[in-house]
Image 1 (cartoon, rainbow, N blue to C red):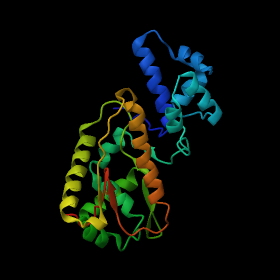
Image 2 (cartoon, helix red, strand yellow; image 1 turned 135 degrees about the vertical axis):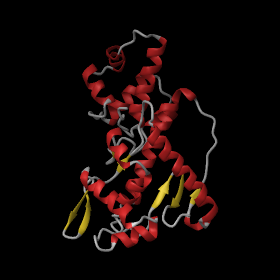
Image 3 (cartoon, helix red, strand yellow; image 1 turned 135 degrees about the horizontal axis):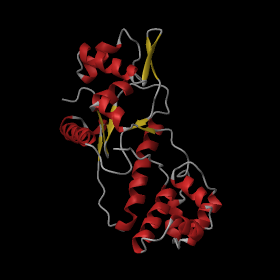
Image 4 (tube, rainbow, N blue to C red; image 1 turned 90 degrees about the vertical axis):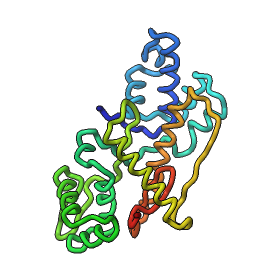
Length: 253
């Protein structure tokens, strides 16, 4: 499966959504025709869809108006900061197959808290219940595929801010199994972690289903923005999982 990159930009999601809607009504409707409707160069629009070209706020506004967007839609799509680039990269399927489960991500992230080669194993045993052999295998794997490096007795993270979710196409069995594991651990946290140390909540709303791709893009962006925000401090001392629930993964039994 080929991973589709998450743009995290509701404007791009809105354009894609409108293009697909028009194409369903008229299968012969082309990207060139859509670009003409927006008064954009077709090659430029293709780069915009691929996240390789940015448009000014004025051009975005013009495009939305040409598509008949309402004021509320324009305000939502052009929310301040929504078109800012995100620092996360998508893990492709071949690399994800090496990771296998959430513990690889947990160890990678825990190196932000403790990176010393001599003390990392007792920490991973205490916090994540990993034996030295299990932890050693994970660290060696992360080093082999270029995510970390051992330098002067300390582990350095070479590839921070990764996202294992994909924005389109079919998901894989491995990704589904990891999601199930995270959901099961969320239930465990609901039962065993004090309320002041976790957050579980939900939202039930009526929506326009045609705009579902836009809503999903905003949710993806929210996850990545939260990651950037939470990791803005240079000092870390705990490991949390976010699954529209927020709970510590350490010592969770």
